[in-house]
Length: 134
Image (cartoon, rainbow, N blue to C red):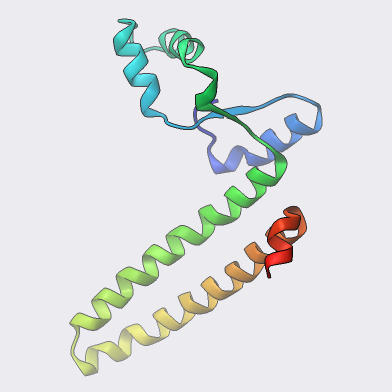
């Protein structure tokens, strides 16, 4: 696969449970580059031919652990981005206006802490090396 939308994570985990090997392409820009080198059309068929031409080293086998952790991180990242945006706006406001953003920033910080706890807990269960370092 070249991409996996987060809403299809459970489906991919189900496939893995059935014994299907799932791989993902490490750099999506390779499809376009290889398609151009081979002068293939931008179509599903062209993408398939391009994927078949890409070296094996550019693919990584997907595990259930990877998919579960990826899904959790995909929740954390936008929270962190929103938090940073609010902090930047907070710094630019006057004292009276800052009071409006304080509850929103505080709420997102609590959500970030909870998500970080969930991620570290899951990582500790799924990766023994990670558990040992905490």
